Amino acid sequence: MKASFSDYLKSTPFYFLPHHGISWLMFKLARIKFTPAKNFIIRAYTKLHAVKMHEAIEEDKYAYESLNAFFTRALKPECRPFAETENSWLCPVDGSVSQARKIENGRVFQAKGHDYSLLELVGGDEERAAPFQNGNFATIYLSPRDYHRIHMPIGGVLTHMAYIPGRLFSVANHTVNTIPRLFARNERCACFFETEHGPMVMILVGAINVSAIETVWHGLITAVGRKINHFDYKKGEVTLERGQEMGRFNLGSTVIVLTTARFKLDALITPGKEVKLGQRLGIYTP
Image (cartoon, rainbow, N blue to C red; front, top):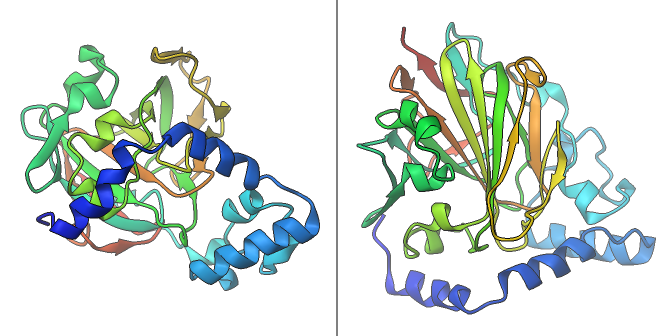
């Protein structure tokens, strides 16, 4: 999609906003447990965003102890059946497809007129980036109304995690269309897995109000200084099954899945398409 004048008008202030300061304030507000205050916050939030409470295990929005607990609510399993096609990978989240296509010579497409380096995206490790140089990617945006737990597209063994400090630009369409290299500039967590279908990377991208990213094996991850934080894992130390929860955002953001070339994206995974956790992301092609 080509950027409009309105996109530039809405995106320009993000260059000057104190991203981390605003996100720190939201982090605190989202964890208020004083009942009248947290109920007021949840009421205001649900008036702004059409949350489908009938899908949640706990349907009473005021039963949650804080906005963050409400935001990371669990869903009824029957609401998200998993695709059972042979060799199929699952869509890891609810959201909308920002982009999904082949990675061409180490460049990842962001929007018309914008792409960014695969190597930069994964934290500058050439060896770990190599299997994906001409592979595939899917970038999925999670809006504030969506379910915000992240699940495994395919079973895998965690080998490495890199937490990469950076900015916290919004990841809404207007900023994706206008801010160069956005996903390679924002704070993010790159999780490297070995699967039965080869290597896979899941990248959890932070954004303004979303500097709080969690994984099931590490918990809340925070950047230390301006250097990349590396975590290595022994074989079998962290093994996750297909469809199992692997992490969550404490407010909305974006997930990027990187695959090798031996993967074919499903025909329904196209820019602008609404997707649900558990539908087919694509298939492995041996």
